[in-house]
Amino acid sequence: MFFDILTLFPKMFAGPFSESILKRAREKDLIDIKTVNIRDFAEDKHHTTDEPPYGGGAGMVMKAEPIFKAWQDTQNKREHKSKTILMSPQGKELSQDLVKDLSKEKGLTIICGRYEGVDERVRETIVDQEISIGDYVLTGGELPAMVLVDSISRLLTGVLGDEDSSKNDSFYNGLLEHPHYTRPREFNGLKVPDVLLSGNHQLIERWRKKESLKRTFLRRKDLLEDKKFSDQEIELLKEIKLELKGEVNE
Ligand code: SAM
Image (cartoon, rainbow, N blue to C red; front, side, top):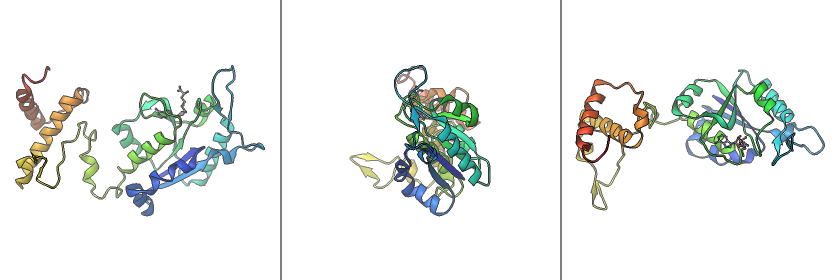
Protein backbone atom coordinates (compact mmCIF):
# COMPACT_ATOMS: atom_id res chain seq x y z
CA MET A 1 0.00 0.00 0.00
CA PHE A 2 1.29 3.51 -0.64
CA PHE A 3 0.95 6.69 1.42
CA ASP A 4 1.64 10.16 0.03
CA ILE A 5 1.82 12.64 2.89
CA LEU A 6 1.50 16.35 2.09
CA THR A 7 3.09 18.39 4.86
CA LEU A 8 5.06 21.54 5.67
CA PHE A 9 7.30 19.48 7.97
CA PRO A 10 8.50 16.32 6.19
CA LYS A 11 11.43 15.87 8.59
CA MET A 12 9.00 15.06 11.40
CA PHE A 13 8.29 11.69 9.79
CA ALA A 14 11.89 10.47 9.67
CA GLY A 15 12.02 8.90 13.15
CA PRO A 16 8.70 7.05 13.45
CA PHE A 17 8.91 5.57 9.96
CA SER A 18 12.56 4.48 10.25
CA GLU A 19 12.30 2.21 13.28
CA SER A 20 11.06 -1.25 14.11
CA ILE A 21 8.02 -2.70 12.29
CA LEU A 22 7.40 0.18 9.88
CA LYS A 23 11.07 0.27 8.94
CA ARG A 24 11.00 -3.45 8.07
CA ALA A 25 7.70 -3.08 6.20
CA ARG A 26 9.24 -0.35 4.04
CA GLU A 27 12.39 -2.41 3.43
CA LYS A 28 10.21 -5.34 2.29
CA ASP A 29 8.21 -2.97 0.02
CA LEU A 30 4.99 -3.80 1.87
CA ILE A 31 4.40 -0.09 2.33
CA ASP A 32 5.69 2.84 0.34
CA ILE A 33 5.62 6.13 2.25
CA LYS A 34 6.45 9.41 0.49
CA THR A 35 6.43 12.78 2.18
CA VAL A 36 5.84 15.78 -0.05
CA ASN A 37 6.83 19.26 1.08
CA ILE A 38 3.94 21.59 0.28
CA ARG A 39 6.37 24.54 0.33
CA ASP A 40 8.04 23.18 -2.82
CA PHE A 41 4.79 23.96 -4.65
CA ALA A 42 4.48 27.58 -3.52
CA GLU A 43 5.64 29.46 -6.58
CA ASP A 44 6.03 33.02 -5.29
CA LYS A 45 9.43 34.43 -4.37
CA HIS A 46 9.04 33.71 -0.65
CA HIS A 47 7.38 30.29 -1.06
CA THR A 48 4.38 31.46 0.93
CA THR A 49 2.14 28.65 2.19
CA ASP A 50 -0.06 30.57 4.64
CA GLU A 51 -1.82 33.93 4.86
CA PRO A 52 -4.07 35.71 7.39
CA PRO A 53 -7.74 34.72 7.26
CA TYR A 54 -10.21 36.79 5.24
CA GLY A 55 -12.56 38.54 7.64
CA GLY A 56 -9.78 38.95 10.21
CA GLY A 57 -9.16 37.03 13.39
CA ALA A 58 -6.31 35.12 14.98
CA GLY A 59 -3.77 32.89 13.27
CA MET A 60 -2.89 31.98 9.73
CA VAL A 61 -4.61 29.77 7.16
CA MET A 62 -2.83 27.38 4.79
CA LYS A 63 -3.24 28.54 1.20
CA ALA A 64 -5.17 26.33 -1.20
CA GLU A 65 -2.93 26.67 -4.25
CA PRO A 66 0.32 25.04 -3.02
CA ILE A 67 -1.65 22.17 -1.46
CA PHE A 68 -3.61 21.65 -4.65
CA LYS A 69 -0.43 21.65 -6.76
CA ALA A 70 1.35 19.23 -4.40
CA TRP A 71 -1.71 16.97 -4.51
CA GLN A 72 -1.89 17.11 -8.32
CA ASP A 73 1.79 16.21 -8.57
CA THR A 74 1.43 13.15 -6.32
CA GLN A 75 -1.67 11.99 -8.23
CA ASN A 76 0.19 12.27 -11.54
CA LYS A 77 3.14 10.25 -10.24
CA ARG A 78 1.09 7.28 -9.01
CA GLU A 79 -0.21 4.51 -11.22
CA HIS A 80 -3.33 4.12 -9.04
CA LYS A 81 -5.76 6.79 -7.92
CA SER A 82 -5.86 7.21 -4.15
CA LYS A 83 -8.38 8.42 -1.63
CA THR A 84 -7.48 11.85 -0.20
CA ILE A 85 -7.70 12.26 3.56
CA LEU A 86 -7.51 15.55 5.43
CA MET A 87 -6.36 15.21 9.04
CA SER A 88 -8.74 17.42 11.01
CA PRO A 89 -10.17 17.59 14.55
CA GLN A 90 -13.55 18.11 12.83
CA GLY A 91 -13.38 14.81 10.93
CA LYS A 92 -14.75 11.34 11.60
CA GLU A 93 -13.08 9.87 14.66
CA LEU A 94 -10.53 7.17 13.83
CA SER A 95 -11.59 3.70 15.02
CA GLN A 96 -10.34 0.18 14.36
CA ASP A 97 -13.28 -0.35 11.96
CA LEU A 98 -12.28 2.70 9.94
CA VAL A 99 -8.64 1.56 9.99
CA LYS A 100 -9.75 -1.88 8.67
CA ASP A 101 -11.75 -0.24 5.84
CA LEU A 102 -8.89 2.04 4.85
CA SER A 103 -6.41 -0.87 4.86
CA LYS A 104 -8.28 -2.22 1.80
CA GLU A 105 -7.28 0.83 -0.30
CA LYS A 106 -4.35 0.68 -2.73
CA GLY A 107 -3.06 3.98 -1.43
CA LEU A 108 -3.91 7.14 0.49
CA THR A 109 -2.96 10.77 0.07
CA ILE A 110 -2.89 12.46 3.46
CA ILE A 111 -2.97 16.23 3.93
CA CYS A 112 -1.56 17.61 7.19
CA GLY A 113 -2.94 20.96 8.27
CA ARG A 114 -1.14 23.56 10.41
CA TYR A 115 -2.04 26.89 12.06
CA GLU A 116 -5.83 27.53 11.90
CA GLY A 117 -6.15 24.81 9.26
CA VAL A 118 -6.42 24.75 5.47
CA ASP A 119 -8.42 26.99 3.13
CA GLU A 120 -11.93 25.50 2.96
CA ARG A 121 -11.69 25.16 -0.84
CA VAL A 122 -9.10 22.38 -0.39
CA ARG A 123 -11.70 20.35 1.44
CA GLU A 124 -14.34 21.18 -1.15
CA THR A 125 -12.26 20.21 -4.19
CA ILE A 126 -9.87 17.35 -3.40
CA VAL A 127 -10.67 15.84 0.02
CA ASP A 128 -12.63 12.57 0.11
CA GLN A 129 -12.68 12.18 3.88
CA GLU A 130 -11.69 14.15 7.00
CA ILE A 131 -10.31 12.09 9.88
CA SER A 132 -9.75 13.09 13.50
CA ILE A 133 -7.69 11.12 16.01
CA GLY A 134 -9.75 12.38 18.95
CA ASP A 135 -11.54 15.30 20.52
CA TYR A 136 -8.51 17.45 21.24
CA VAL A 137 -6.52 19.88 19.11
CA LEU A 138 -2.88 19.37 18.13
CA THR A 139 -0.54 21.89 16.52
CA GLY A 140 -0.56 20.05 13.20
CA GLY A 141 -1.76 17.05 11.20
CA GLU A 142 1.65 15.33 11.17
CA LEU A 143 1.22 13.30 14.39
CA PRO A 144 -2.35 12.29 13.38
CA ALA A 145 -1.02 11.24 9.95
CA MET A 146 1.61 9.05 11.65
CA VAL A 147 -1.11 7.47 13.80
CA LEU A 148 -3.17 6.76 10.68
CA VAL A 149 -0.29 5.24 8.69
CA ASP A 150 0.88 3.13 11.63
CA SER A 151 -2.56 1.75 12.47
CA ILE A 152 -3.28 0.83 8.84
CA SER A 153 0.16 -0.61 8.09
CA ARG A 154 0.04 -3.17 10.90
CA LEU A 155 -3.08 -4.70 9.34
CA LEU A 156 -1.40 -5.29 5.96
CA THR A 157 -0.33 -8.84 5.13
CA GLY A 158 3.28 -9.53 6.11
CA VAL A 159 3.80 -6.40 8.20
CA LEU A 160 3.43 -8.09 11.62
CA GLY A 161 5.44 -11.29 12.08
CA ASP A 162 2.39 -13.25 13.23
CA GLU A 163 -0.73 -12.67 11.10
CA ASP A 164 -3.00 -13.54 14.04
CA SER A 165 -1.48 -10.94 16.30
CA SER A 166 -3.59 -8.03 15.02
CA LYS A 167 -6.74 -10.20 14.99
CA ASN A 168 -6.53 -10.65 18.76
CA ASP A 169 -5.89 -6.99 19.45
CA SER A 170 -8.28 -4.77 21.32
CA PHE A 171 -11.18 -3.52 19.14
CA TYR A 172 -10.50 -5.95 16.25
CA ASN A 173 -13.43 -8.13 17.35
CA GLY A 174 -15.20 -5.43 19.29
CA LEU A 175 -13.59 -6.36 22.63
CA LEU A 176 -10.57 -5.29 24.67
CA GLU A 177 -7.80 -7.87 24.63
CA HIS A 178 -7.10 -10.22 27.57
CA PRO A 179 -4.09 -9.61 29.88
CA HIS A 180 -0.64 -10.98 28.95
CA TYR A 181 2.09 -12.58 31.06
CA THR A 182 5.65 -13.67 30.31
CA ARG A 183 8.65 -15.00 32.30
CA PRO A 184 9.24 -15.24 35.22
CA ARG A 185 6.38 -17.32 36.66
CA GLU A 186 6.46 -15.23 39.83
CA PHE A 187 7.24 -11.51 40.06
CA ASN A 188 7.03 -9.43 43.23
CA GLY A 189 4.97 -12.19 44.81
CA LEU A 190 2.47 -12.23 41.92
CA LYS A 191 1.98 -15.51 40.10
CA VAL A 192 1.01 -16.18 36.49
CA PRO A 193 -2.52 -17.73 36.40
CA ASP A 194 -2.19 -21.56 36.55
CA VAL A 195 -4.30 -22.08 33.44
CA LEU A 196 -1.69 -20.37 31.24
CA LEU A 197 0.91 -22.92 32.38
CA SER A 198 -1.43 -25.90 31.95
CA GLY A 199 -0.69 -26.55 28.28
CA ASN A 200 -4.45 -27.10 27.75
CA HIS A 201 -5.18 -24.89 24.74
CA GLN A 202 -8.95 -25.15 25.01
CA LEU A 203 -8.88 -23.98 28.62
CA ILE A 204 -6.41 -21.22 27.78
CA GLU A 205 -8.63 -19.96 24.96
CA ARG A 206 -11.66 -20.01 27.26
CA TRP A 207 -9.75 -18.10 29.97
CA ARG A 208 -8.58 -15.51 27.45
CA LYS A 209 -12.06 -14.99 26.03
CA LYS A 210 -13.48 -14.61 29.53
CA GLU A 211 -10.82 -12.11 30.60
CA SER A 212 -11.36 -10.19 27.38
CA LEU A 213 -15.11 -10.00 28.03
CA LYS A 214 -14.56 -9.11 31.69
CA ARG A 215 -12.19 -6.24 30.81
CA THR A 216 -14.58 -4.91 28.23
CA PHE A 217 -17.53 -5.21 30.64
CA LEU A 218 -15.64 -3.38 33.38
CA ARG A 219 -13.88 -0.73 31.30
CA ARG A 220 -15.81 -0.21 28.06
CA LYS A 221 -19.42 -1.36 28.44
CA ASP A 222 -20.27 0.82 25.42
CA LEU A 223 -18.44 -1.67 23.18
CA LEU A 224 -20.82 -4.45 24.25
CA GLU A 225 -23.99 -2.52 23.37
CA ASP A 226 -24.24 -3.50 19.69
CA LYS A 227 -22.12 -6.64 19.81
CA LYS A 228 -23.50 -9.98 18.58
CA PHE A 229 -22.46 -12.60 21.12
CA SER A 230 -21.70 -16.28 20.47
CA ASP A 231 -23.28 -18.92 22.76
CA GLN A 232 -19.95 -19.28 24.55
CA GLU A 233 -19.70 -15.52 25.09
CA ILE A 234 -23.23 -15.40 26.55
CA GLU A 235 -22.33 -18.21 28.96
CA LEU A 236 -19.06 -16.50 29.94
CA LEU A 237 -20.80 -13.16 30.49
CA LYS A 238 -23.29 -14.87 32.83
CA GLU A 239 -20.37 -16.31 34.81
CA ILE A 240 -18.65 -12.93 34.94
CA LYS A 241 -21.76 -11.14 36.18
CA LEU A 242 -22.29 -13.76 38.89
CA GLU A 243 -18.66 -13.49 39.98
CA LEU A 244 -18.83 -9.71 40.09
CA LYS A 245 -22.18 -9.57 41.87
CA GLY A 246 -21.85 -7.33 44.87
CA GLU A 247 -18.63 -5.77 43.52
CA VAL A 248 -20.11 -3.88 40.55
CA ASN A 249 -23.36 -1.99 40.05
CA GLU A 250 -24.87 -3.07 36.74
N1 SAM B 1 -8.70 25.70 13.94
C1 SAM B 1 -8.90 24.31 13.76
C2 SAM B 1 -10.21 23.88 14.41
O1 SAM B 1 -10.57 24.48 15.42
O2 SAM B 1 -10.84 22.94 13.93
C3 SAM B 1 -7.76 23.49 14.38
C4 SAM B 1 -6.48 23.63 13.63
S1 SAM B 1 -5.16 22.69 14.30
C5 SAM B 1 -4.38 23.84 15.39
C6 SAM B 1 -4.04 22.56 12.96
C7 SAM B 1 -4.09 21.26 12.20
O3 SAM B 1 -3.73 20.19 13.06
C8 SAM B 1 -5.41 20.86 11.62
O4 SAM B 1 -5.66 21.48 10.40
C9 SAM B 1 -5.27 19.36 11.48
O5 SAM B 1 -4.61 19.02 10.28
C10 SAM B 1 -4.38 19.00 12.65
N2 SAM B 1 -5.09 18.45 13.82
C11 SAM B 1 -5.19 19.03 15.04
N3 SAM B 1 -5.87 18.26 15.89
C12 SAM B 1 -6.22 17.14 15.20
C13 SAM B 1 -6.96 15.98 15.54
N4 SAM B 1 -7.49 15.79 16.74
N5 SAM B 1 -7.11 15.03 14.58
C14 SAM B 1 -6.61 15.20 13.35
N6 SAM B 1 -5.91 16.30 12.97
C15 SAM B 1 -5.72 17.26 13.88
